[in-house]
Structures are given as C-alpha cells and as structure tokens.
Amino acid sequence: MNENEISYIVRKCIFNVYNNLGPGLLENIYQKILIYELQENGLEIKSELSLPVIYDNKKFDLNFRIDILVEDKVILELKSVKNLEDIHFKQLQTYLKLSNKKLGLLVNFNTANILDNIKRVVNNL
Image 1 (cartoon, rainbow, N blue to C red):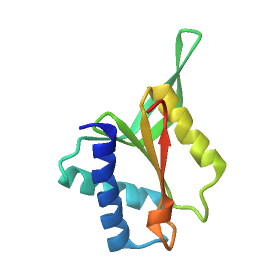
Image 2 (spheres, one colour):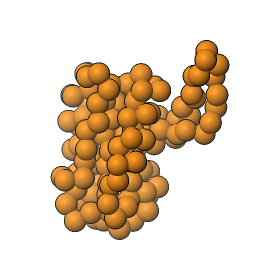
Image 3 (cartoon, rainbow, N blue to C red):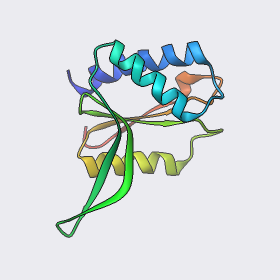
Image 4 (tube, rainbow, N blue to C red):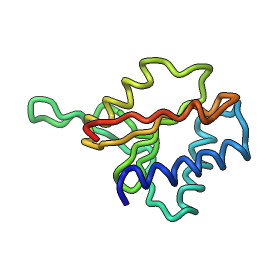
C-alpha cells in the first residue's frame, strides 16, 4: 500500500474511535484505542517509537517519540487540545524529516468536529 491508501484506512479508524468515544479524553486513551482499531483493520503498527537525531554524522537519542507509525510509512501525531497550534504542525514536519517519511496525519480528538481536525502534513510527497 502507498501512503494515500494507508491514510484512507487510518482516517476511517480515527472516525470510528471518535464516534465511539467522543471528545474530551486524554491523548493516551485515544492512542491506545486507535492502535487497537488500526490493528483490527490489518495494519502494522509501531507506537512510542524513538526517533534519534542525526547531526554531523552522529546519532543523538533525545527522547523524540513518534506516537504511531503505520505500515512503516505514515506518522500519526495525536493531540487532545483546545486548538491545534503552529508548533504541532512543525513538530510533525520535523518528525517526517528526521525519519525520512513522506506523510503524517496530525489529529486533534478534543473537538466537536473530527473531520476538521485531521490534518495532512507532507514531506516530499
């Protein structure tokens, strides 16, 4: 599957989780349930994946963590905040760059309308 095919399934799973749980819960609750939903849909998942920084040909483990990596291609950055801020987009852009992945989805579950709170972030896609 390519990134767009994966993101289609991921979005369906996000809608299922949101429609069943609703807004207002902590991020880690959405993360655990979304992982379950993604796996039930046959997707390979890695969570809380450590992301090192390579600088000057040296590897630094600086505790960057990818919330969810789907099929080793799409990064999911989950939030449960009042509003998505520019820094959330920049964080995901940096994760994409450091991991050399092409597509990320920034998701804010603390909203009245989940459709408006799933944002695609691309890196050379």
